[in-house]
Length: 227
Image (tube, rainbow, N blue to C red):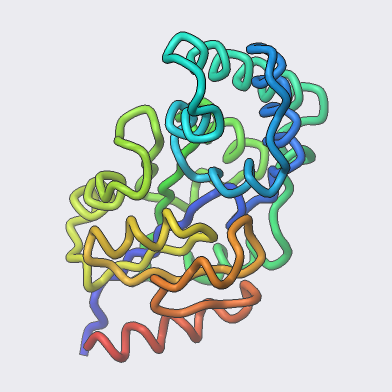
């Protein structure tokens, strides 16, 4: 019997790569731009995954839209400078086991891979180029073209581009926004526990994994249950 096509969509920051050092430093710069002290690091990491305009508005609700716009510009400037100084591969290193998991899934003919991220297309392109990852993914969804997570638009577009039904797709991410987005799109969510949101926040996940080596068996279990 022919196995059905499946789609595995990955979040980026906190799931595939650890970019928290640059995120935190760039957010400090963004708050400096508007003359406010930055919030604690844990508060900043809780908004990772949201589109940048939504993220700064949540972190600085006392500011008006013009202030938020200055923060967005300051964040982008700082992030680009930090990435240029160290190189994207060094400033956003892959988590242990990430490339092995991607390569193993890519080698399965029935599995397609995608990305759904709060990054801009420019930022994602730089990262994929630095880690030589572009060739693995058939669909790339970024913040430029969609409402912020947890709106399901990114995953709906990924499903439309690949022609697959939600039951044949899975979202892998580290935040509650990823899990809520998956649920809103009718997809199962796999929460990874090494990222930026605590395990207890990932209660919408169908499964949790503590290591990339656990992903293939987790996928098999999910899809066996679905069939």
